[in-house]
Image (cartoon, protein in one colour):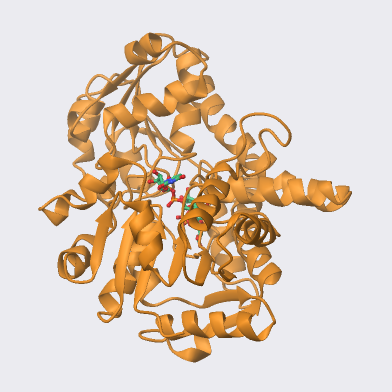
Length: 463
Ligand code: UDX
Ligand code: UDX
């Protein structure tokens, strides 16, 4: 089937950028992104492309080019489903907060709602593409819903996991390492796979487009994220050992990264990984392994999460210990709240957990992040339900620049590796702080020697 109309359900961090790039690269395909959230769609339609709801370098330019031409954002989900030959499902799949599998399994209620809506609306054959990260064998459940509640039309389910990383989403989409498409091994399945291959081959060379069966594709996404997260937990485990032995984790990472079998990427020790995927996907993997009775497999991967939680807690403990075992009423400034640089996403950011620990110790947290609003920070803390909103509000003050945020602070903690942090006038910041002035560099981005020569007491990760 030659695809001329695509619909994507879910205008989030994945659906929005992915569809914008498809629309830009395939002017002959009409791409409609729909979402239940009216405000989100209104924001995507903001006349000024700079105001779209997701910040990704290069994204607003692409939206400016394609929007209104062949890229549309709408809340009319039924119409978009009805018109499209191919429907991407890109809704969120958070970890369950209730019932069986609570805290581990993915909550598939939104996926199921999408499947039921597609089944109800579709009057012609459709290809349904799973874009959200899902537990293995979800395609089967979607197929069963579509076939049993639909109007007798044929559905093909494809798995097409997204490997883009936030902050580099546009570059990752334009120039992907690989595109993975899983589908049925029947003739209809292969035809559906080919339709999607054709879409991507408008800008991706065919040797980078990999096709597999549905289950391999679903599992590959979880495996890729588990491997990436495992590298970070591995180097973070070493960072603690480095601190005890006098080794320097940056030097160790460089030394092992030069082994071409290991490679240099994802070896940066940090306060701990965050983001919407790593923890959720590993928990999913653990849950699936356990459900098949594979306890050793489950325990092996769960350790990656345990290590990450330990790393976050270790960071806040170190701040308290270094500040003479009390941070009560002390102002501690966070530079960065996002889970990594170049994004306004804060999901599972280490900053949230470190702030929570320090507020429990009655510290006053002041924050500057170039892209994250105070409302977002507060809702992140409220979501943990450690204390009432009012108490979070009292404990948190947010500034629109680092110099004001650091004034009169006892310590600074770097939580996100924003480039601009390395360009500050650190002498000016030092002069405005309580002495001794401490820096806890949770990202190892600052120049320790230079800061020490100014007078700071510098603490990095793993040195
Ligand atoms: C994506 C993937 O879908 C998720 O599985 C992956 O692990 C992380 O990335 P993301 O795009 O980041 O999720 O999520 P989010 O930014 O929350 O966007 C999802 C959108 O779907 C939201 O705008 C939400 O309003 C919308 N939605 C959700 C619907 O339109 N319908 C629903 O039924 C549920
Ligand atoms: C990840 C995967 O990289 C991507 O392929 C998948 O589709 C979604 O999940 P993302 O979560 O956007 O992408 O960001 P990523 O760059 O992987 O970083 C995740 C976390 O690990 C961040 O908190 C980051 O700061 C941290 N990290 C990364 C480290 O602490 N050290 C590193 O060496 C690399």
